[in-house]
Length: 319
Image (cartoon, rainbow, N blue to C red):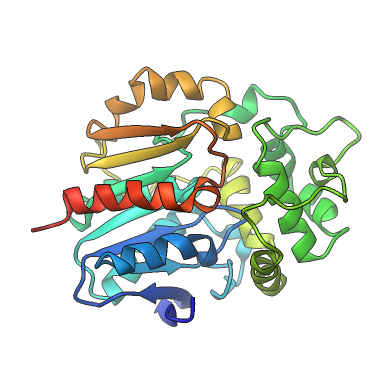
């Protein structure tokens, strides 16, 4: 971990934190985290790809981790993350990159590939298959207690999270999201109450790991992370005018799906992936299933995931 360097890039008036390891002359890989994560979630993958001759870059999104918090977090959009990612690549003079995303970071990566196909050598997504914007509206058909339905409402998550310190919030979400069941609270229950206080952390996530997360969420708070990805669902934000008309990712792509990831149990998701319907939009997609894989598959099974990533990178890197 000590060999990972930490830098800041000024983008759109904000200082964004970028963790990095590997030679600047090596093929580049950018890692895009989900929630409740930060750059640190990619610690195993960054070192593995750097040791294999790649340059690994893992930013914290605006409002996450060590990056600046925007002046009005409640106005942050999904496309801010897409633009920031492209701007980071430009700032680091990276003309071609492999994009690896987890959870909603997968969608950030896919949209970067849609907007900037000339920059993207390949896309790897963990746990989330590409869907065209506006499709896959699970929250509309799941109960009111579904975690996204709760967290998209202003004030509800703040009251829930505010009962605990940042470290406990992250701990509880990690435990909830590690399960195969879709997180749904009962009418008089909050999402974090789905965890009994005596429940231990997953075996692959240590107290030291939790301390890193807790410290950085104590710094950043949860306002921007609740806005993106959860509260943008309610916004009427329009895609930028430069959005491509053809919603198809042509780059080589790999989906690594844990079969015990609760996302896989969301209505229609398994069928969408297994039937190949997803390939209408990502024609060059290969899917690999890990039978015991959870929502945090890259932390749970780092060696297996690293090998899948390296096989893909080596197959598609520029000669």
